[in-house]
Image (cartoon, rainbow, N blue to C red; front, side, top):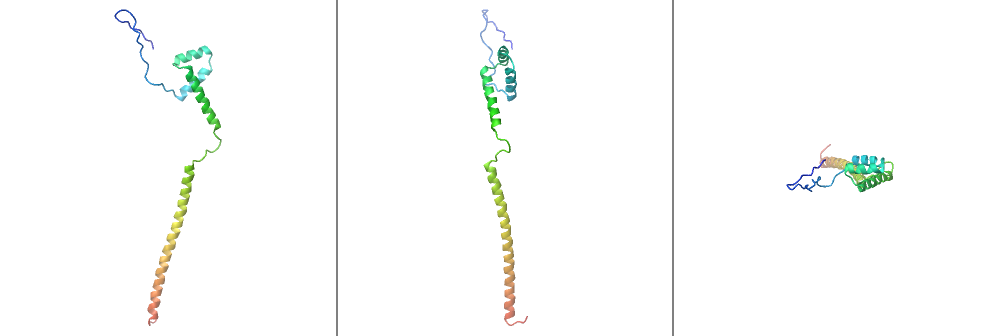
Length: 139
């Protein structure tokens, strides 16, 4: 971007500088990785030129290196194998199992109650039949 200084009516240059975009710049992970790889592969003079070209400060490079190294350490520190299960998932599985067990017990109880009610009705029928035959009626 080439900024041409305008002159006012008296022939002196206007000291106003055009403002840059407001707010903080956001850098993607891919951009950071690309800049770090380029920065680490060049000599000192070229590093300064890269920073000027991209409009970056060396402190950003330091911060990005720390972020990269911390991410690599975290990845290396993670245990190999299956990730640990969430305690909530264990509790959900336990409750589902208990629910299925109680559902099966309820089904058995309903069957027993149904059989008992039919047996009770059958016994009542036999009792009434035997009572009518014992009152002097023949079989």
